[in-house]
Image: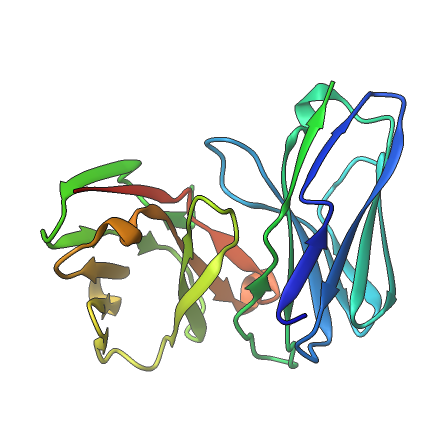
Length: 115
Length: 115
């Protein structure tokens, strides 16, 4: 595997289900991100992990719970979602450096549909 | 006010035409970075270019070229002799110290290249 991978690619869930999205990066990066992409909206940054610590949480509802067990893996645990949470969820990674910013590399995304 | 504005929601051209995608940004930082990403129908965001605020030289990469003008706060992207494979949504993004170097995204421009 190369780059950033995400599983599953598609997910349909009911509002009472619990599911998890998985992201894995094979680039040796030390920062990982979750984004939400809804139709006709700019990308919304949800969470940022740098060196496995959460450094950013952009007012995301608690029904979304991230987990970063190591620098290569990132999870997004989903619980009691709403239909408006249906979107493309993108994972990205980068080599974060203090006072600088490097390009992010993205996975293919998980297309989530909440019924 | 939006920090990154991509005023063109959708552009449609015939193959082999040149096309320019506009990006206007807003920042008070003197050090910042600008990016372009491509999102084909498969969903994965593909990094195209990063430019820092101190480098106003235009960049050319094959059929792609970028025009960075600090005087007008613009970072426009031109595709020469467009091809059907160029059809995608293109995003411009800004990274600045004020925002802790997180990417601030434009809304994207959908480019349709007709055969």
